[in-house]
Length: 178
Image (tube, rainbow, N blue to C red; front, top):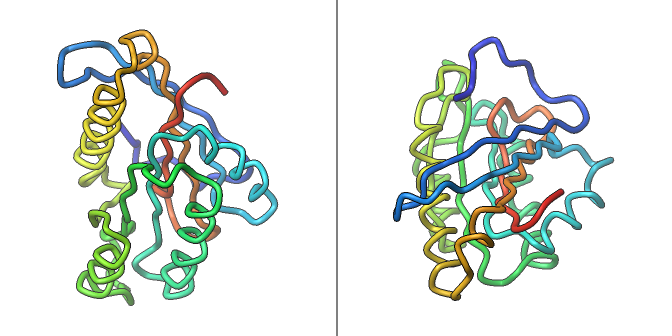
């Protein structure tokens, strides 16, 4: 659960958590947060290589953040598995100065064949639903591919925020450790 006193990431941040799979198995997930900062872009490329899922997040109060989504998606297409589970997330819906409409964001998500979620990391609104969606999608993909339960239990999630994009951001689930 995201706490309201959480501050924006500066540098790299790491969290580990356990989730229940649809079949009741415990799945260990590691969450890496690079804040989407340019200086961590090469590190992010290495995360993409083994990622099972990625969440691209923008700040709904920042048009530049939304415009950068296309660049992040291009990076994902270049460096990640072509079948990676993806979701687009508009964050900071708790703020009044919104500049990116839900419709505009949904159009972009549809163009890239991924779902769109709106969240408030500060208020933990829709964050659990987003994580649950990603966990089920990644689990189903791995299960369909025949991965063993022990392989499914060693997942890593990478959260990559865009600079100035707010609390929730791009998340990736990555098989293996670190």
